Every structure is written in C-alpha cells, then in structure tokens.
Image 1 (cartoon, rainbow, N blue to C red):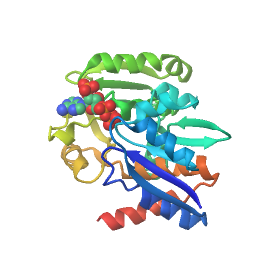
Image 2 (cartoon, protein in one colour):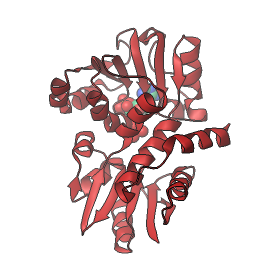
Image 3 (cartoon, protein in one colour):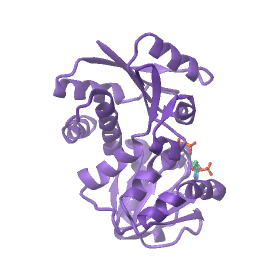
Image 4 (cartoon, rainbow, N blue to C red):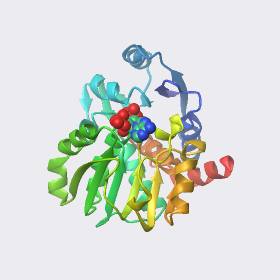
Length: 275
Ligand code: ATR
C-alpha cells in the first residue's frame, strides 16, 4: 500500500490523516496516511528516512515549510516564489516540492464560497509562511490590488518585491504596509498571522472592512473565533480556513494520485463533525 504522511511540530491536532483517508475512500484509492511528529532539528533526516523506506508523498506543516522548499531537488515555481513548500513527492529518484496552499485558499474562496476575486481590493495580513504560500495564486486571480500588511513591514516589502514581476503581468497593484495604516474599505481581508495563538486581538482596525467584505481567517476552530466575531460585528462576511485546509489537501492528493477528490463533500462532512 502506498504510504503518505504529514510532518510537523506540533502535529497532534492535524486533520490531514482523516481528510486523506476520506479522499482515498471516496475515490477508491488504496493508501495509508499517517502523522509524524518531527524534532525541530530533525526534518531533513525524517524526510530522507521516510522516502528511503518507500514513502510516496509527504505534507509539511509548521515550522518546516521553508526547510522543505530548500531541501528538494526540484521546487515548483509557486513554491519558489513562496520560498515554502507544503507538499513533497518522490518521483523517479527526484524529491519534488510544491505548495498547494494558494490553490487551496482560492478554491475555497472562489469555488466553495462563490466569491470572485477578480478586480477586488485585497488586504493580506501577515508576511510569514502562510502569507507567502498564497500570494502568487491570489495575484493570478487578477484582483485590482493586494496590500500586504505586516507587523514587521520589511518582511511585507520583501514578499511584495519577490512577486513584483507576477503582479505586473497580471496587472495587480502590490503594496507593502504597516499594520497600523494599511488603508481602508477593502473588499477582502485575509488574516494569515498567528496573532490569535498568542491571545492577541485582530491586528488591523475595523476601518479596513468595506460593508459586506469577505473576512477570511486561515485558521479554523477556536483560533479563528475572535476574528470571525470581530468581522461579523463590523458588517463583514466571516469565513474560517477549514475549506482552505480541505482544498490544499485535495490539490496534494491530485498531485500524488492523479485524481481530484470530492473536496466539497469532505468539507461538509468535516463541518458537520466539528459542529
Ligand atoms: P506561519 O508559517 O503560520 O505564517 P510565521 O512564518 O511564524 O507563521 O508568521 C507569523 C506571522 O504572524 C508573521 O507575519 C508575524 O508578524 P512578524 O513578521 O512581524 O513577526 C505575524 N504575527 C504573529 N504574532 C502577531 C501579533 N501578535 N500581531 C501581529 N502579527 C503577528
């Protein structure tokens, strides 16, 4: 049986094994998918061992996404732009790195939520791995502009600079801003920070929200709750990152198995289970 896994630290709460098992069941694929807790200094070793033992593919979560992109023999264009990877595959002796987070986010927003991003003004909050992983795919939807706002503004600037050519190509204006003055009345705001994990409030003012704006948190469950409540209180449409989680997994499943799983069904099942 083909063997897959997700590596991270921590990894205990990962829903990826459940999602991939369900994808396999629904598409009639035979595979095993486990979670693996990897020591903070042991990622390269763990990957090498996993593939040496015949592993076929591996998802990568925090804090190893940057290392995963550097480790591979071949890195996809989107993972190169992100400088981060969440999907590793071993094919014909080559370790390949890809990043499906952007596709996951956009498929959830445009496909599942039915919110078209073309021509919109987007505020992307954060400039860490989560934000880097989605910026290229967001630009490809051809929004009017994307403002990347971050506590450390230099990181936002460097992320924007790396995507400048793609922005020009897609006619999307790219801006880097500090959290305090990111601009107002955005059609879409996306929270890609980890601020809620430290118990901190939403890191931008409510003036960033246009009435009816889509307010998306890449987290889900209790970690997204503060942001969702804040968005609702200020007249926005809140959405958590559960759909992104399922959709990024669906993209990885497609890379590995060549089959697109019924992600909307699995998302509905997860929402029902978590409710
Ligand atoms: P991830 O891989 O989940 O993106 P990360 O790379 O550590 O994690 O990035 C965390 C992001 O959340 C960064 O943008 C960080 O801002 P800095 O670059 O200034 O560190 C942001 N962040 C974390 N805690 C925050 C807080 N309390 N307020 C605002 N932004 C915060």
